[in-house]
Image (cartoon, rainbow, N blue to C red):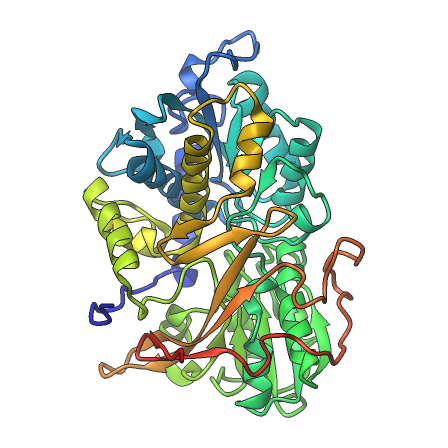
Length: 493
């Protein structure tokens, strides 16, 4: 393994507003000239394009408006890179993934990109875009969606349309697989709860927290992310005193910060506020409660090093849950090869981590939004190879995808009985480097976490919400068993 390459900087939360504006400006016309490569060929009568010609007609569900509109380039890039690496495709632009790809083929079966849907984080809009891709442009395979509330809506659509194959992009809500259980819907990554496995254990047993307040976005992903942390922290004996859920997209968080206890009333705060609200909510905390300190704050993956650059380096020491990729201090030959393939595919990409300004493509490829769509694309290609490119029976392709065991850049992955990823979770900490800057350092890996979260969740339990799960002490299989990581090296054995 090579652990010497410098960590690539992340510039996510504090720059998302600018990225959102750029993405929205480029994608507001969803009907045609919005960077959707095949939309101009759609039948103006609205009739469905042919689906029985032996071609995989692929639609991507992105999100170019709303709180996560700044990630539109990332999701197109992840899908395109999978097609380049695993289906022999060539990208149509050296500087933008939204221009699509050409020449993708697996086992003699062509893969044609018919369009990229423009979501805005709402179920209604993503269903509108799904129907456009499927019912007007003839998509028979979908990769996406991106965000929490979108996932269950698309999963229900897939369940009602069994000939359609859907590989989720990076939507982190729990119920899209655990509760909907569509046989043709696959999630090749973890959900928001999985990504926080082990974080409560660390904060309780290493940081000494006993009482915590939680603040998270009031939608399915925020509920799922906070549910994982609450289940983990309470399992080892912690107490959650307050749960505050501001609506996604809130601009003034002062009234929600006022609902939190003061720093002298709890040992810490867990944050799962994302999109354009990450920095705004933390600034409101500073104004209402006082400075942020690393010994009293932790969060999910939205809680990242650039918050420190905006709000002060006192946040050093804060712990962060995992995501689809590992933090940049962990390097393996597989990760290096993957990142290098992105740099070899494009000259530059305006991904979210570069404020949607041109940057090395590997910067975008290292982030979980890009990687989730990449993993889905790899699963599609490998599934096609498993059926020798024969898509005449969609059920056969779907069965093949569900049985895959993928060797992905950030580690191997398989699916559980509900077609959701069983994943290794990388937990990290914000630290001050030799230059006096904050960076993210991996501290532990929690292996093999599935969607039941050690028996906490199941098809018959309620969906995560403001009130569920309760705070209960219980045995979780990873408690005390996380693999330490030192200088980017997992200390196994």
